[in-house]
Image (cartoon, rainbow, N blue to C red):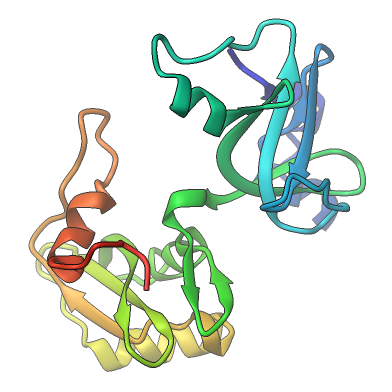
Length: 209
């Protein structure tokens, strides 16, 4: 079921910077939905801090059919842990950052691919981009960007890395960029990062380092 909404009153394209920023949010929880942002231990985080979004309501699922283990991983003390990473601001607006399973841990930093993808998608020659974590002996994981260019357009890895320098903090900048013809999609038309990662993590017992 839907758990949050952005009201008609919040759709103000020419308002203050604060009101314009709200257009990037997922709105506020419905009246019958409780929502909080928690860390890996389930502790509720204060406004502005990124964590996993957990919800509780009268219309949530009880669990997965005949999948007790999966249910226990998601439903904890009556709260559904959505696997969506994000934060709530001081006024209760919810901002999504990424999926928990897509998070990259490099040198002890939590890096959310979506933020990097949004930056690279602003580059004129880029049509599609997927950012993943690949093995790195020094940092555990390294940020890698896979890029599909727009037809007839060209650019270089150096140009894109310079663009990232101007728009991202240093530890979020991709360590490498690879140009590809296309990106695999799942049945819903979303980029399938699981397939993308297989090439780089083949032969390893874990998909983290």
